Length: 422
View: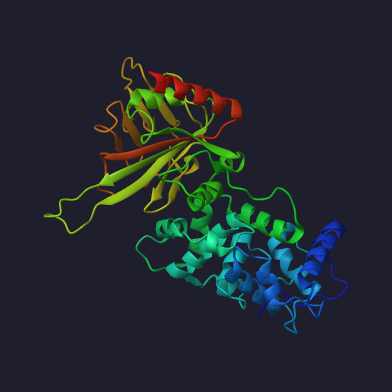
């Protein structure tokens, strides 16, 4: 049973006339130079996806499965792309078995090379850790559009995401995998549709990761891709600006807090923790963890509030997981910063928490001595940012990245030059 039945000449398509013309233009470009210009070859599709050649081969096989003859004619090409490019309510072809599937589901089935499935079989399908790893590698290749696979060799982002989804299990049922994936990466459907729209209809805007203003000891493009798929803020800026780094700034709380209070845009805070084990008492080796929080508003000194429901906390390494506010218990303690405590207030920086205590993440004024994490709070979804036994932080490195306009970046440059002169 294939994914679509052959259409007759009277069957409507979901593409309008302009869209069909764009698809025909792409088809003509792909068959250019071929001896048979009525059908696509596998090599033509592969050459169109230099960043994702293995997936391109599977996409070609999936398209050919939609044809009674196995040939990918323009009609078959267009029918197949309806599923990847049009919204579900736009579909005219009621005979599609995949009619109610989302873009991430279609791409995942293509990645699995599973071309003979309907909804009932789909509900009994499982996916292994290794299959999920391949699929996420293909998804993250979206951000390297037009580049060769040699420029996209690092698969750390795929590993930390799949490890976060699978835990210690070797496989998941497919429906649970897709549901968990959409929860962790809320923009994955949007980005997949945009990717194929750019590929086959040359639409705007192109998918573009924000650039890093300076080198990072933590972030690379693959990990940045996870942030892009997680939150719309990373899709709306051209650059992340390094505001603070313990490698190049004064490593004290006052410098960190001054940096935040002088920046009038959202910020991403990344924290690297080292858990050391006594080798005589434990067979475990030292473990690094990277986690942090995103503050969706400018930081304000207590008692003013910082953050809103778009703020969140996350674990990045060794497993990726987001903890968003809609899955919390309704708390509104998004982000906290205090440099001059009064009453019950504490000097420090926190995410989550309640009544100036039990913060989800706490960076104390004694930055390297009294900072900690918790597994739950009332604002964000419950869950471990690190392994369950880690509570007190042993901070190795902190980076703060700004998601703001150019004039805010320039004001930070002035601040850093002033600090260096002191």
